[in-house]
Length: 67
Picture 1: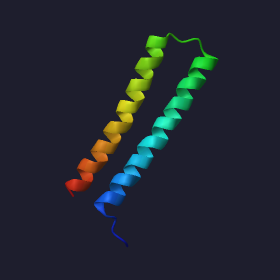
Picture 2: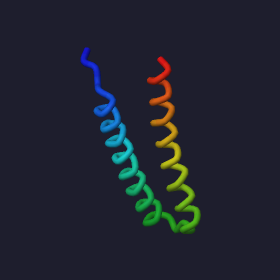
Picture 3: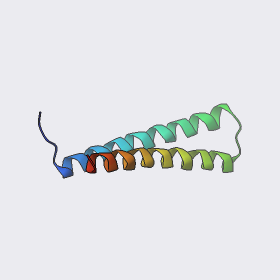
Picture 4: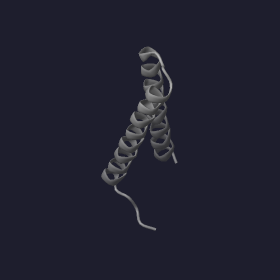
């Protein structure tokens, strides 16, 4: 098994975050097109999904550091 350097791990997590944010952007667009949603609600949904992704990545890093 090969070990990832800290830089590689950081780069991979950045890629994961960027892909997730891209998907959130697509979901937001779909919600906006399919359902008439108040902009404020759409912004709250967007922020909460991004916060959830960041929390997952943070918890993953914390778990890996404290193993």
